[in-house]
Length: 121
Image 1 (cartoon, helix red, strand yellow):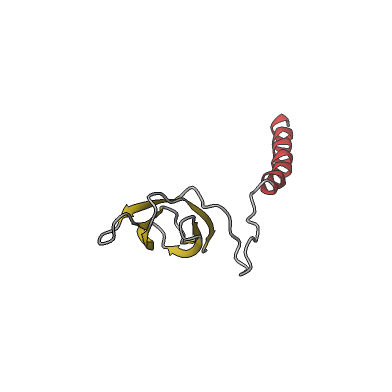
Image 2 (cartoon, rainbow, N blue to C red; image 1 turned 60 degrees about the horizontal axis):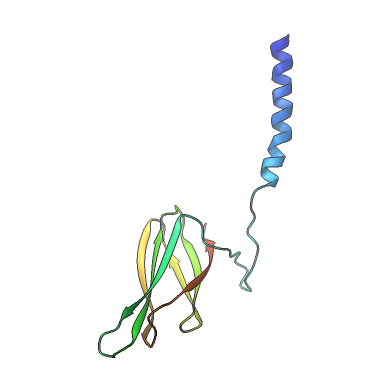
């Protein structure tokens, strides 16, 4: 009898806890005009930028973005760089790494990026 009462209590608690846990889930907000929900990149997507010296033109650099997607789904990102002040779209397949040349022969030696990404599922 005690076992049955205990199981009923555990069942009631789990039924009450399920909506609470589901209600705390993070939902992506639509931040773009194309209808795709974008947010900061997930932890399984890493990116970094470099300003590498360019060849042929003195005191200029090529702006590179290196991206690594260890997610099990493709990632679609809009990357903004502070050198050209332009956005570039990249789509990276699951478990892939790639480098992107975003600008050439720029008179800078540093670059910073901002990314807004969406999971393509």
